[in-house]
Length: 539
Picture 1 (cartoon, rainbow, N blue to C red):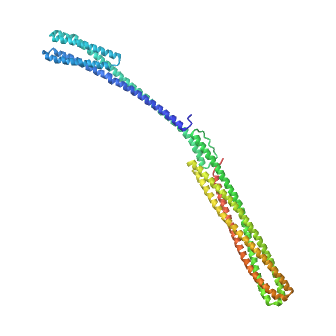
Picture 2: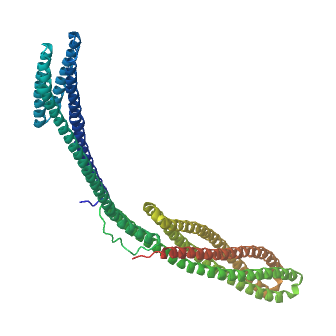
């Protein structure tokens, strides 16, 4: 019934409010009873006592004024006394009427009625005494005064005193009742207050325990999550708001587990990709080193070819001046041309192998570019997963701040990975461009070499003819001299192209080293990502 914090607090507040209303109602009822008793004491009993006292005074004053009539001989003087007696009688009647109006009990009303009857009897005896005085019967008047009048006065005074004493006793009793009710009300109020305090303490303890206990369990779970321990489930028995809180924490834990697993899987994929790329880069580096060695050999061969061609040109020039040695020079020239032809064919073979190596380098660069694209995609996925982890940590509030820092580091790592892959992509693009350029230059060099072979073949036939017929040696030597000069120029061009090939090969080798370094950096970044995710304990 009271599963939520709201319902528990509402029930405790209602209970306390009911207790306060009960205490207030009890206090109000007791105060009203006390007020009624006090009004009865003040308005009835005290007033009746005061009126009884005044009635006694008026009765005694009438007796004293009656005694003055015995000593006053002038009627005018007695008239004033009569007026005063009439006034006091009227006042006594008024007092009796007030007393009759104040009494609320049957006994009190009976006493007041009896007192009024005695007052009438007293006034009748008093009137008889006055009449005796007025008729000059002093002795009868004195006897009337000392006898029935005095007796009626005494009876009236006794009844008035009896009424006064009764009212005093009732007033004392009412005062005792008021004191008793006051003490009773105080005790009941104190007991009700203590009961309310105890009920409030019990309710506060129960409600506090029902809130604090599951809250501590949730805090412990969040502390474990903040420390990276995600292996424990939220086995917390709770209802209401805490049930929703525990469900949210468990959802957050499961979400973090999925995110960490995805990040770890992505990091493993990056490590595998970087290892594969490292092997490819090593192959490229090895191929570039081999290509560099071959290009150096080709350069040496071309330089030798250039020297041979220049030497041939020198020999041809000498042959023009030494016709007698034309046959010998023709044999020597034939031998030199044959060697040159072999060298050129060897150079052509080297150039063809170099062209194949450059094509292989271009293919390897394309594979590396594909690996770099995969790494960039993985880095983007890692960045997205890190962003999702930051969002989940932000939802967790203060308890997810530690994980938010890890998520930010993972996102920074992913951004660095993207930057590194972009640099690698640029280098691979440069390598591919240079490889394509070198391939074109190699094809051009092959064409030139074929032309050189054809030209040397054309030289071999004249030399054979020179050997057979030295008569035509001068003309043949002129042609050979022209061809030699042309070959020297072509050989110089080939040498320049070979130097360019060597420079491009060296640049490729340097780019391969740079790519290997970047691959190592990427591997280190992926290992750092795995180290960061390994701090979490997963179920």
